[in-house]
Image 1 (cartoon, rainbow, N blue to C red):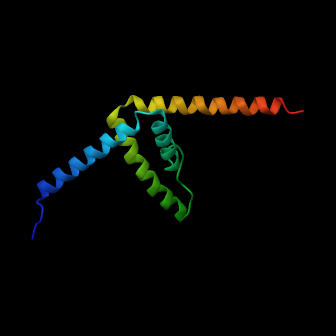
Image 2: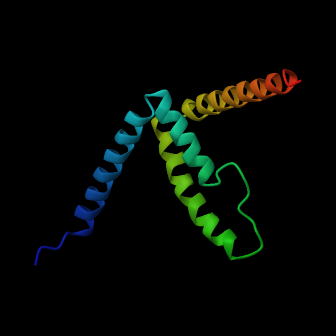
Image 3: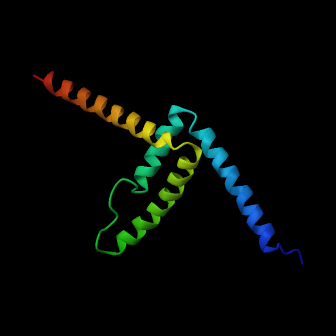
Length: 108
């Protein structure tokens, strides 16, 4: 039987986690990757309450737990990234808002 010791299992887990962080770092090098990860964090309810008063909240809290793991890894890569991603997201939302307002003004 080929069983890993606790020390070997911890080393393997640490190595696999470091691989995932490097992969995430590669994704976050592009604007598209940053936009996608921001969307993923929003989808995981990172910027909203998950309280619903029913069992749906439990499901949403599970999704949020995934978002927290991603968030933690992003902070490990570069703590400034979340701020940069938030600014980019806010600028995009503002541009879309202005575009919508201009379209409304140009209607007869």
